[in-house]
Image (cartoon, rainbow over all chains, first blue to last red; front, side, top):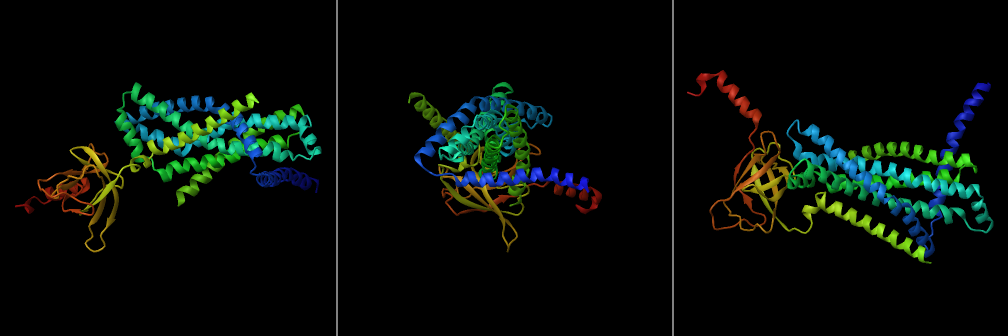
Length: 258
Length: 157
């Protein structure tokens, strides 16, 4: 009998967190009021979340593009098919690497800082102070960060893809001597707007929602101690990584069915 | 007030940069780019066999790409493949008696359509059909023919 009871208790916790997450998600969505003040708050969060992540996204993108080109060049040269290096680069970037790596980098760079910031606000009782002043902390603190993140991730993904292609071109054309016309024309003829470009866009939108929501959620419901904030930032990265990879498979499966 | 001002400018710059990147990617790295800003006219060709030819394969004259294959369908009555081409309007002086062949890049490369201009003073217009065609060469059929003819040497004479 006691064994059964402990089993139920260990099962109760994760289910409770999932339920809390869904309710909080609905609360965040319904707390959005399209006012000028709210938009200004979102814009300044776009600076802290998006503009500040620009450098890491672009540097990583450039090197991912270079290494992807190098790896595929080495294999393709065995078949004398180095002309399709642009195709391999663009397809793997648009379909998988661009959205996934951007979401992971974003959660490491911006997600952790959102979680720590909100967690610290909670630990220093700023959130309860707002509630005492009849200011809704969700509307004031969570909503601008959430929507700024959802806007930023697709744009960061586009910039990641762009710099990765630039890195690929730099390596393939200027170092390995692939003809630049062949490189571009192969890429152009094999990347479809509907299938590949839109897949990149939808994925990055969903990943943006997932990454930013996990960050605000684990910050908002953190244990209000130094230890708790530390755990919240770790949780942000771990849960985001797992969920992004799960959603990646689901979206790919759904989009390739139709 | 000033730092807030700077933050807004930087955020605006980031948003602009992101949107420009999206547009640039859509137009230069996908097939949107080749469709935008160019006018095409449609020409049909009938082949008895298109082989591995696929939509969006290039159409060339003298090795220069002048258009793409738009779609490939089967004529339900004559059982021929009907290939629709999108040809760039800048090439509007193609003679009407031009012949078309399905060619291969390299030994095992992709299929494309090569046009061989004729000498007629009339030019191809939108909706016209190219009648002189040469179908795709199927390596399997060539091998089968070769095997068949060597197995029965007396057949040809």
